[in-house]
Length: 299
Figure 1 (spheres, rainbow, N blue to C red):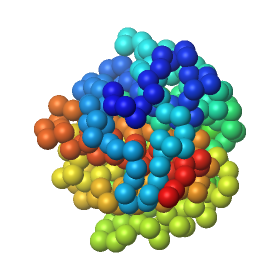
Figure 2 (cartoon, rainbow, N blue to C red):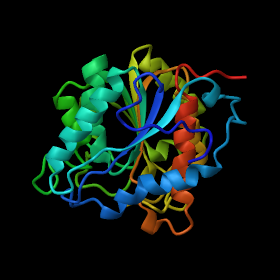
Figure 3 (cartoon, helix red, strand yellow):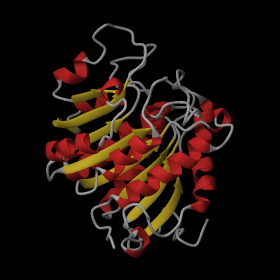
């Protein structure tokens, strides 16, 4: 760890931490995912060593504003995905009950479902800024209701999301049906396909997103495969023609002013990340999320 992080054990953060960094890694029973994603959080931590105190682009000073701690990994059950989701939910229930804002390293996108269960238990239905190549709203994948392709369908079914305040950004690629995003739109989600993002700044889009989200609680979920694999190849389900890192930063910085109650950065797979750039990008995006939290001061 570097000297900017206050490291504490998971059971000892109640009065010390405003922003808690943790990681969760579902087991390989989520069979369309990649077991190598288990090692994403560890590599993100390694690449975070070069992160510094201040954000030169925005003048944010997160470490002067909030108490930050890495509270370690959730102790998952590597043989049982449903039990793992229960463990993640119970872990985050304790975290958010203290007033902490969790920033999570994944791990595949399944983790968003139990985290949002815990978050919505405290705050009620939340808005969602979902950055991804995939909508992750399938009803079932290979006969299973819980997996990295289904989390936001489960969240809608359980009333965890305020569907009028959900935006999905960066969706693209080959799909199973000609109306693959129809279900999202039918729930009231705003869907911004990658083609709508090509060759432009996303700063104007994020102004619209802030207006959509309003003052209510918002969760930010960022799948690294939203970025083009030319920039972030280390992921399990890459899709060409994606967002640039600059656009990714614009999205996260564009969340400043929102009532963020949690964030995640998921799907980093180190064995496919031959240069380390994907994990490095993930670490920097998490830092940008930290800078975007409501209580962070700016010089």
